[in-house]
Length: 123
View 1 (spheres, rainbow, N blue to C red):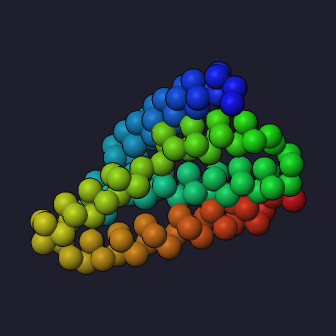
View 2 (cartoon, rainbow, N blue to C red):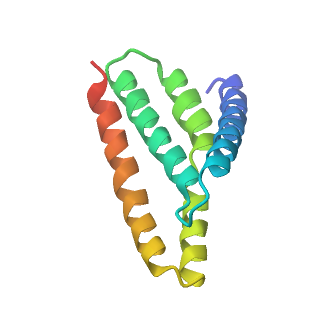
View 3 (cartoon, one colour):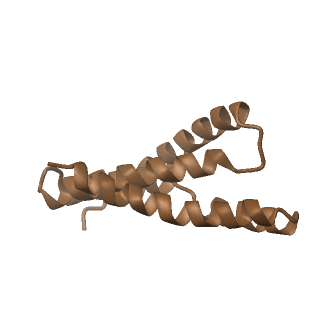
């Protein structure tokens, strides 16, 4: 394995985490309801982009190294499954059962659908 690839994956992960922080800040400033919209939007966008990256890789449009940098690095840092789980438990503990149930359902179904759509739209 090329020694530089793990370092570049880490750097791309940092860029993805920084992008998540910026997006999260803007969405939270505009959305002041119980539903954790920022994490949801970020995970849907990450799913769509992951599907596109997968499609590009399968069609040999990008290399395996580019796929690692984009999917594992950038999108790994950008998406946030652990935050979604924490927000779900927080809603449940606060007695917001409807928010919990709705958030869990859409946070599993919609990002997976976005991955499939992203894969599908790659020619």
